[in-house]
Image (tube, rainbow, N blue to C red; front, side, top):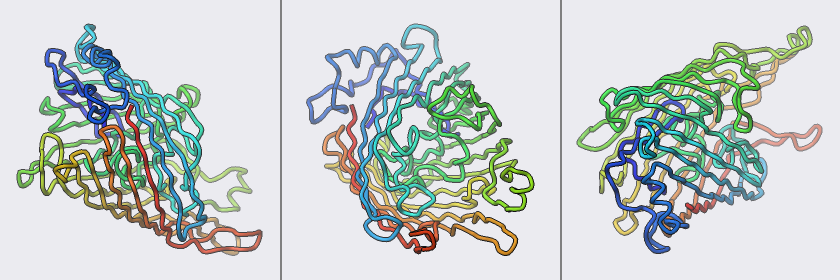
Length: 435
């Protein structure tokens, strides 16, 4: 649970750029203070230094997430796997630091280790999103975010740098993130029609706050490199661009909090097509290409009952829809829906849980040879339920169950043998420590 002394949070609902605008004149309660069982982080206030640095515009957020997960029936392989990810994010508010107003620098360092069951379910959409970052399948360390934002007024800002595109992209109150606090499955945290966008890439853009209040509405436009990686600077392989725009608005239907997000993207990069004709490959000595890739997406969250509006506690609905060209990302249409809750139980105000279902319509990849056409995938669906237990504010334990109708039809068991890939049941346990 990240407790920052944020007064205004300008969240760009486009592909993962977020900034926190803090006014140095107003002091808030120290979130790091308290005994071991009540403070927000394991390491606390560092003898007062952490709060002092926050007052001067410098904050550090760190956490370690570990997941044990196994395919207990169906899928491709029934083994259990263990993996984890650590993340450190530092921010600088130039106004609080006594430099100039409106500037925000963000630096993120993360690493993962060991492995996951993502390759053992037969699913196209990973069941353990946390293990994808910064680079799958594990044992990697990288700097996915080194970006700077400058607000020119209360209404307009600009941003540039190496941008991490997941954490706040396609933001949703009940279904969002890197698989470390809410749902495990990628389908519930981020729209898979947007997977053409690199996780970490060079970019620049404009942020517009129509009402000067980022809680009410945010509109953003970005130009991103289509070939970025978390492990490189991004300047070494510039090939194509992604143009994207999105808007997020807060609603108040029935006097209850909700949000609506609408966005779209277009890429001019030439990708390898998921459909291949053997004659073309032989004749041209190259794989067929796919140009003019596009996607559009929508999501909503809506509280049905709120126990504490300021803290975001209550129960509500969420949903996503996405559509794309279906090539090079085979997900052509996608939707998900579910129920989420935060702090619903009075004595458990930091607990949260969710139930969700997703369906992905697949543009089935084909290999065309002279006498037949071979297809490889089918439409995919999945169900997930989790309960995140806050044993302390910084020690979070989450049991999870998923049932997946995977996209993969069959797997090879020998040179000539084939085995059907059936519905997979996946159990998991996640432990997160906020440092």
